[in-house]
Length: 287
Image (tube, rainbow, N blue to C red; front, side):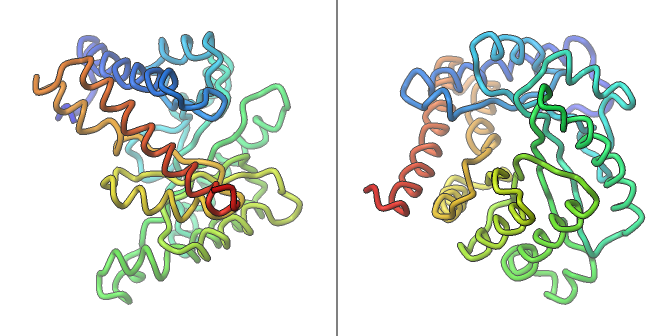
């Protein structure tokens, strides 16, 4: 969005933090308009969102804070051996990790990542600590795409769902135990059911899944939300860029006022909540 590369200056950091405040205001506006507080939460990092995390905690909002270094192919801690100190400084409801893990990919890479993830999982097992949210991305291996003639959509529909199940099972076998799996959108209900079955196997009945937006367009995100909401075990969604990207771009380009950006972000978030909740209730036979 900003087009910057390399280490940020204090002024640049402040600009990003200010934009995140606009998004946070959109979140609060959505709650004021009817999104249930007990079902809504914010995800923001310490570098740009420390003030937001502190305010959200005071307001009693559900919070999530990432522990990973961003924009890396291999999972590692943002603050290295000091990761626990930073989690405890904010005590978010959820400690979140984003992990790229293909179970049929580089096995040494997977082992290195898994060792770090087990360390975090073991730390978070204490009942007084944050819950564990695991964002699982399964990027295709070159050979996997070649078998599908380079068709990434075919990969998403035909191959990725089973790879995600395998990834969950491998991580569980390595004693990595998330409370919530954050899952890339799936087109078929039966694939969502298989993901829930994997996430909850072996007595993990309280583990939930949420569907992420992956920056897709509104129509695709609504499809994913509708499919996931129909499956018990999918308890919600995490949709960020789809909701805030264009309003923020327009705001930064002076095409939208701050108030207009806040209102549009709130509207989009409320729409996602309504789509998910409506689909869930229809499946349950309530409406």
